Every structure is written in structure tokens, then in C-alpha cells.
Amino acid sequence: MAIKQNLENIIATLPSHVTLVAVSKTKPTTDILEAYSAGQRIFGENKIQEMAEKHEALPKDIQWHMIGHVQRNKVKYMASFVSLIHGADNFKLLAEINKQAKKHNRIINCLLQIKIASEDSKFGMAPSEASEILQSEAFSTLKNIKITGVMGMATFTDNTVQIENEFKLLKSTFNNLKSFKAENCQLKTISMGMSGDYKLAIACGSTMVRVGSSIFGARNYSEQ
Ligand SMILES: *Cc1c(COP(=O)(O)O)cnc(C)c1O
Image 1 (tube, rainbow, N blue to C red):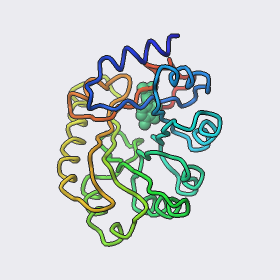
Image 2: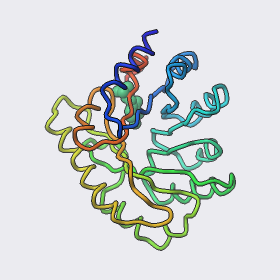
Image 3: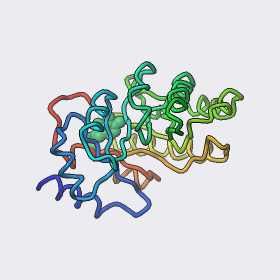
């Protein structure tokens, strides 16, 4: 019951142009089904194996988003079904996603993860790197992926001014990159904001928020 209520409370605050990814990592399939019955269809996971198992067990109209760091050798385990990969942060990874997508005769949508946090622990590429990749000859040959936006994670801090500046950096990076258009690149999504900061993220231009604990409750581990 609580999950349905939490979900409805959050959805009520979201502008219509903002998509909600319900982050279900570590949570059992029963919790996901509760959100599913309330109408939620987009779920985010940060471990490929866990996402593949849940995909196997749950209704097939669920759209699975990989929001965590992606190891190249594991792309094959999600290539047949993943709906959006948020954490594409280097060219070699994009090339591998393209290769695996091709095997399944599909196009996999990806977001370029941009490093906006000051912490060393956060993944992502510099805005300049993203721009170089998009304009490269090598990128233009990747026909089985599509870059549909950018993703970023703010520093884990109470300093809202810092978080706001980092979100603004992602928004301006998006604005700069979106002039680049190709068959495999059309930027429309800015994935930023989690339970603690999604309202601020939306105010800074987010179009996709990734919310976990505010829907499903706290997770039983300290790692994000
Ligand atoms: C876990 C996670 C979230 C959701 O975090 P909450 O604080 O539980 O909302 C969002 N994005 C990423 C990349 C995550 O790993």
C-alpha cells in the first residue's frame, strides 16, 4: 500500500514533461509488482544481473533502465531487452553496446553520462569528451545505438547551491550537445535528480528523474 501511495504522491508533483524512473535496485519483485499495479512501467536497476533476473520474472511490458555503471563484458546480458542505458561514459562501451544490439537486431537507446560532481567516485565523461565522441567518424558508424540525452549525478552533499550548480552544468552541456544531430543521435532527455534532489533537478531542467527510496523505502545498504 505504501508504495502505491508514495508513487502517487511523487507523480502528482511532476510536470508532464518529466518522466519518472522508479529505481527498484535491491528491492524484491513483489515491491515492483505493487508499483506496476499502480501503473508504473519504467523501472531502474544498477546491476545488470539483477535487472536481467527481474526482467525474466516480471511482466514484459516493463521498460528496464540501466542506471548504474556498465562493465563492457556484461552488456550482452541486457542487450535483448534493455530500454535505456543511462551510464554510457566512454566510446569503447558505446561500441560494445552497438555490437550487442546488432546481434539482437535492435537499436539501444543510451544517455551519455557526464561527470558533474566534484567527487572522484562518480563516473562520467567531461563535456568536451562527449562532444568529441559525437563528432567522431567512429561514432557515425554505430548504427545500432541511439544517443537520446545526457545523465548526471550531483555530489552527495547537503550544499544545495553546489548541487544546483552541478545540475546547471548538465543542462548547459545538454544545450551545447543538442545542436549535434545525426541518425544515431538526437538529444531530448536530461536524466538528473534522485529522491533527495529531484525537485531541484526539475527546476534546473531535468526531464527524467530517478527516484528509489522515496517510493520503495530505504535500502539495506549504504552504497548508492
Ligand atoms: C540508487 C540510484 C538512484 C535512486 O536513489 P534514491 O536516493 O534512492 O532515490 C538514482 N540514480 C542512480 C544512478 C542510482 O544509483
